[in-house]
Length: 352
View 1 (cartoon, helix red, strand yellow):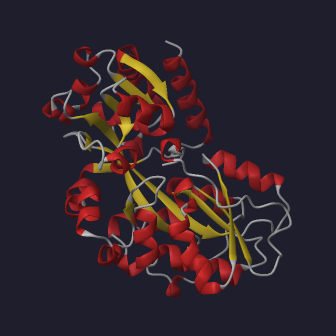
View 2 (cartoon, rainbow, N blue to C red; view 1 turned 30 degrees about the vertical axis):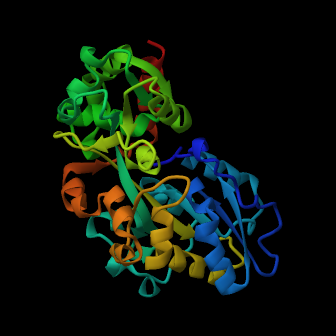
C-alpha cells in the first residue's frame, strides 16, 4: 500500500541520502516507505554491520521511479516498492537478481510470496516483506459494526456525511469492484462503467476524501466515523488510546496490499544491500517492521510471530490471518492504458 505516511505519529527521516553517498565506505542508501525509518528497525542492523543506513522516504511507485531517474547510477542500493509494481522495476532493468537460497522464502505465508510478481524467468528480484488490507476502518462506538460487514451499507445514505475516502484510486476502485462482484485480477476497461455508479454513490455520501494523514485524523477526532480504504495500518497504532477505532473485512471481501524489497542493479554495494534485505525479511527484522512507529502491518515471515508479544499479535489479529487471506484480493494491476482510464474515472469521481 503506497501513501502510508502517518504524520500523527511524528515519524521523521533518520537521514536523507544525497547523491554520491552510495560509494562511501560503510554506508547503505535506501528508498523506502516510512515504516523503515523507525530507529528501532534500522539501528540493530547498523550496529551489527558497523554501517550507516541513509534513508529517503517516498510515497507512490511513480515517485520512486522519478527519484531513480534523476539520480546517478549507484546513488541507491535498496528499493522498497508496492508488490504489484515489482514487475515494472524489473522490466526497467532497475532490480538485481537476489540469491534466493539465502532468503527465508520458505518461512513466508504462502499467499504473500507473490512469486508471479517478485520473480521473473525463475529469478528472484524482490521479496515480500509486509502486507495488510485496504478495507473498512470505523469507530465501533458510533456505527453498527454489523453494518460494516456489507460494503454497500458502509457507503449508503445511512452514513452520509460520516465517511472519509482514502485518496488512492487502486484500492478504493478495487473495493468498488468487489462490491459489484468483479474480481480485482480481472478488472478491465469494460468494468469501469459498472463500478462508476458505486464510486459516485461513495463520493456523494462522503464528507471528505484525503490521504492517510487527513483520513486518520478525521477518524481519530470524530470528524468521520468510517474510512473507506482504511485498515489495520490506519488504526492499529491508535488501539492503545482509542480501542473503539477498529477495522473489519466485509463479507464480500477487501483488497490486500503487499510491499516488497529488492536490491538495485546499479548499486555499488550489493553485498551489504543483500544483507539488509536478509535482515528485513528475517524473523527479528520482520517483527520490528510489523510494529513500526509509522504504521503496523502483518510480517510476511510467519516466524516473526516468535518475536512478537501476545498483545502485538492480538492487535495484528495474527490468528485470523488465514481467513483474511482467503477473503481478500490483491490490488488491481492495470496496464498503462487501463491505468490511465482508471485515473480519469477517479478524477471524475472526486470532482462530483
